[in-house]
Amino acid sequence: MLALLTGCVGDMPHRGAWVAASHNHEVQMAYSVPDVYFYYPDYRIYYNRTEHCYVYVENGAWVTRGVPAKVPVEVLLASPSVLMAFHDAPAYHHSSVILNYPKKDQYRVSLRR
Image (cartoon, rainbow, N blue to C red):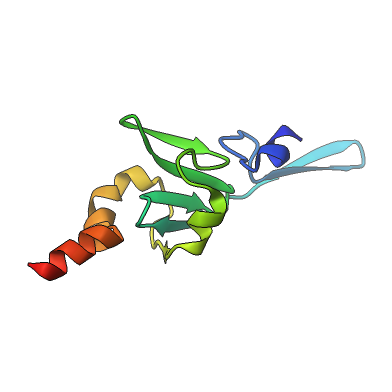
């Protein structure tokens, strides 16, 4: 219930599993759902649509939060975003993502050169 209230499923070990009882036998089936990320270049924040969490760098470390710390969700959602093609952690791709999708103010500076 706490996960639903915070809006962040996080690293729940039972993710993607369900259990069904049949004739006093327990059947477990596991499946995996790939993570889907949207990137907000102006804030360098990723939104994990699968887990309903925001992922970003805070004080030099990657964090996962139910809401971003430095920008209201309404402001973030009103800004441009890009659907990412990767399905693993943003940390593995961030250096190339920020080159391909610079912040708006960085883009304006590069146009003046």
